[in-house]
Image (cartoon, rainbow, N blue to C red; front, top):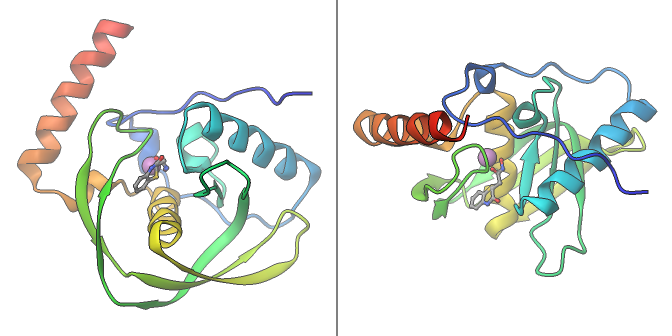
Length: 169
Ligand code: GNR
Ligand code: NI
């Protein structure tokens, strides 16, 4: 049975600014949410999705940076415990559709999280996976990649998206 897809909020929706709360208990409802988020991410298509983007303000993210969508990851209460180096990436966001801009972030990270079985684990990430996890954790903190851009660029993106959203309403 295929999970029900979820609606992705778009910038400048104020709900994207909500700080997500830690998940105290990894219930079946959380596993179901992770499945729905993965289906929504693959359908979009995207390489990551944070619960904040689907208007669920709990600390859960999913990602899959593989070519063939064969490596789904679920991170609950993720925390970056180490970051090394620096890398520039052209980032995009399902909540900022159609805009791609360079963002600088640590290149390599060590992340602690809990998996869908409720077990803690550590993950060393680099490359696109490291960028994606940092981008998703930002969402859980109410932060978007456009926040790293100049106020002028951010305002231009905001105006263009608002205009499109009004046309499509
Ligand atoms: O699909 C996505 N691609 C992407 C590309 C570069 C840097 C980050 C990302 S994440 C994005 C999906 C998304 O918006 N996740 O929150
Ligand atoms: Ni995003």
